[in-house]
Image (cartoon, rainbow, N blue to C red):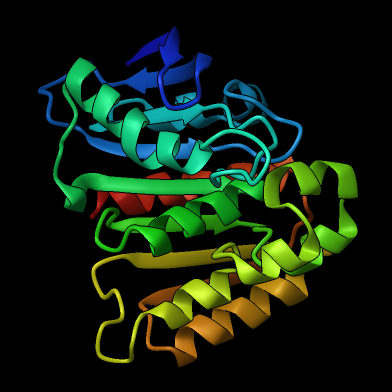
Length: 245
């Protein structure tokens, strides 16, 4: 396995970006996992706060770890287009540079906390783009997050509370956008949250909501808090799941 740190310019964001990549050194045409960090983190977070590099040894899975700059991986009301970067520019660039599969059945996205929201937002906005989406302790109720977090920071991303409510940022609204006969059956959604996590009620509620809407969704609730120890355990399970996909 090779570890690469990449510094390049994003045309979509109009600025330099950095990402860390774990790349197998085997046959090529690898499955790929886009792994998103949480608030306060960056492209190095998963490397320093989990054993992701150990879990990737002797697999045929590439891991792409970009920076989200605390902007929730959406196209910001008062900022840059992170959703477009994560779902369009970044995959295209990586598929051109690296020997990774371009087939959606081999493409996955996961994240912790803010990154869990970003992973589900991307998968719901782009039906059929990912075989699996994984949220660990996800900030899945963005309205509640708007009230809990810094209003200044949230305003830069989502605008006013009215703009957030009227926009397409709420995951339940994205679930509802597809009719009962058009639910995305291709993507498997996976929600995990620790029993000591303050976001547990929101994760329970959103799982029930997706399940009632007919989505292919699983849920795991286990001991743990909103911390790197819990997320490390979950990403290990994700790698094992993708290996068998």
